[in-house]
Length: 464
Ligand SMILES: Cc1cc2nc3c(=O)[nH]c(=O)nc-3n(C[C@H](O)[C@H](O)[C@H](O)COP(=O)(O)OP(=O)(O)OC[C@H]3O[C@@H](n4cnc5c(N)ncnc54)[C@H](O)[C@@H]3O)c2cc1C
Image (cartoon, rainbow, N blue to C red; front, side, top):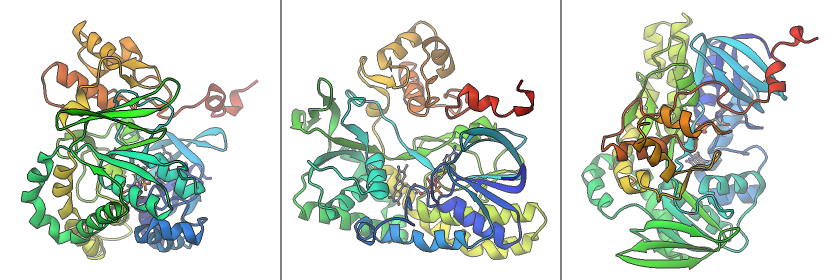
């Protein structure tokens, strides 16, 4: 790896790959870094190595990734897998962990395409062994063909939950129940957005197809679930929930939960980009123009890191960002940028018609986001409960950073990824205020764990 590139792309998912292809085709010196072992990102994970049988089980959307990954492999972009980015600053200096060694590289432009993470929502028992994210279940399936042998309960809301249920059924997994935590009124609130959503009707037909398949397979889809809780002594034994005012229990040793996905903002915040609270997506997003340009010169963002739009939108957003970078580097002029990007801009506009409908349909109730029981752990790394966070608020520590400083929440290995949103929601709830743009922990490098030895490898000449 060199010390300097014209363009460094962080993330080899649909956004990063499509950007790399466009930029490399126009002669830019591009390096793509990704912590995974192979290109594809979340959706096309392990696409180059997976068996034909598993590909069938994962469905047509997954198969689309072949062409994109192949095109990328044939491009001149340098690819650095198993390389994680632990810092990014406003001078476009990038801290990498490459084969166990830390190093810094620099770029004229950086495209951040780090994707999304599953929205962490703390609920009673969520830290018990046997409770996992649905995305983690899907990763094991894609990467290693591992599926639950003795059945599974799926719970939460969002398209990925339906997709995983469909994929599991194809692989012969027994799904004991699918518990839907979206409130009933969501459908009513989504309906006014349906006419616009029909312009991207393939999402709706696919969603209905998954639902029908799941019903036909005899899986109970239980809607209007609230107060989901996991119980067990050393590991999960059963779950409980409320529905129509009654309590229910279900024996299971595996619960996969999913509450949608939210942008990965650690690196963009570390680099000082402006962000805002998007009340529709219920997440923090970077402020961008339609090309993915951030408030920091030379730093662009594309794909789910920019806001949740799905894999196809990510692909087009990556291309748009690449055209903008080519324009900013003087390789193409504005007219060429606009001409070459016209199809992507139209595609994105059309594809995003579905979003307001989905955002209303899968909107999480405030109680689920902000009102975890007092003894529920919110910061998993430091084992800080919702009750402790509320207590700090009432002791006068009203901001996330004060709570972090006093309680250590957000100071563990995940650096607040798992608790950042929950802590901000709990504080907003206690203070009876809406969510604010600046309600979150400040981010400081390293954003991922780094040992002192790895950090010391940055300065080999200073070693004795
Ligand atoms: C767990 C999970 C599973 C999903 N499964 C599906 C699915 O099956 N079907 C579907 O339609 N959508 C799925 N999604 C949504 C899907 O991720 C996106 O719509 C799409 O992949 C977004 O593309 P992207 O290029 O923006 O990001 P991604 O595809 O997420 O790619 C981002 C890449 O950035 C890398 N990265 C992130 N941070 C760093 C760092 N600090 N250092 C180095 N590399 C980094 C990641 O390893 C990843 O390869 C899933 C999302 C998640 C979180």
